[in-house]
Image (cartoon, rainbow, N blue to C red; front, top):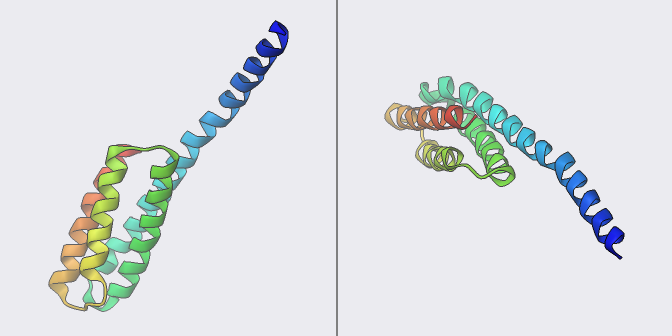
Length: 118
């Protein structure tokens, strides 16, 4: 009986050791992809004619940031998601330069938060 419990604990520890590092790598990969999407979005946010491209890249960045937050919770990622959602809400459906630039400024704040998390 004692051996069986020890064996289960050993197998459980081995599986945890194998799976846990993968979670951290997945979160870092999603953070890197979110950063890449924000870097693509910012130039579009500074041009009012391309607000739809800005919003598309921000949507992709939000998706990756949310997946990174689910894989490994982090306060910087949480703030970045909040900034990205605000940027999307401001820039969605408008072609006014002031709104586009405000969205780009929020995207830059989100970028700084994700770089701090990564």
